[in-house]
Amino acid sequence: MPVVKVLELVGQSRRDWQDAAQQAVMEASRKVPNISGVEVLNWTANVKDGQIVEYKANVKVAYLDQGAGVAE
Image (cartoon, rainbow, N blue to C red; front, side):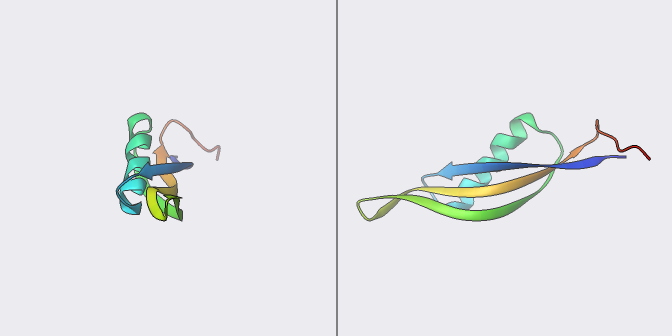
């Protein structure tokens, strides 16, 4: 039986929050196959001189781990 696992990541972007979330998913997909969904937990940003200079997205990425099984 397949198991869904969840990774918690922080994506960063100088463009916007959507790109920050996309960066987290792209980074996860380099090492984790079978990503099935993402949940955005929090949006934050770094500010310098009154301007947002970096957007951050805290996300949970869900993926199917077909190698793990649950004993029945």
